[in-house]
Length: 245
Image (cartoon, rainbow, N blue to C red; front, side, top):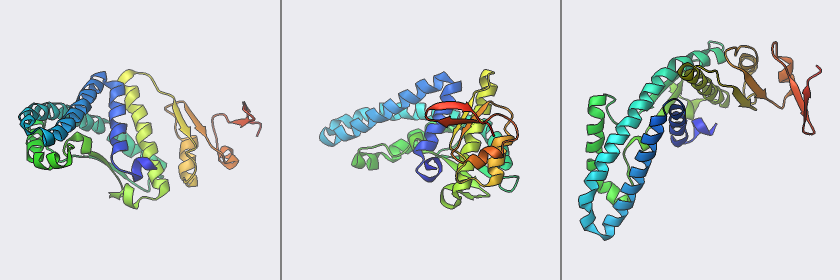
């Protein structure tokens, strides 16, 4: 639930981790960008005591803009792959009653030709505020993945069942994108996801997910009784055994 309810950090982390699995070079760019922001922040604090260091800020602005443009570009491209599958999965989870919409929120043009220059301009325009706060206030480390259900923000207006369903749709679509990228189907592990889901959503998870090998844990014995296909097991005293029901 924190993925939806809380600030954008977890949602950015989701996108970045997913991209790193299929594009190792992105991990390098992400690491370099994070380091450039840390070093820029340290410099902003040093300038307060040593004003002459402001002359070196331009080089860090250029590095942050160049690397930041890579991050935004790859996040948008990945979301373009993720969105159709996630929206389809959510419709299935909600029995076609609700729609999921995903959008990447950034303050900069998504045009690749303009992005780096726009980031650089924003860093320079925000410099006076950054010098006062000692931190970099603009860049892809402030962007967000916006999740809407039926056209309204899931963070503010979604029920817990809807919020859980949106995260499930995102994670399952991540598995689908990963499968298409590497040619192998990942195993899906869903730990105690049944709570807060109505019976229709539970039925979808139990009986309509056929593309992957799925392991679902739950504490409600009634949920297992709704399982049409597959096998169920019980854990008692640390011993796992086939369910006899």
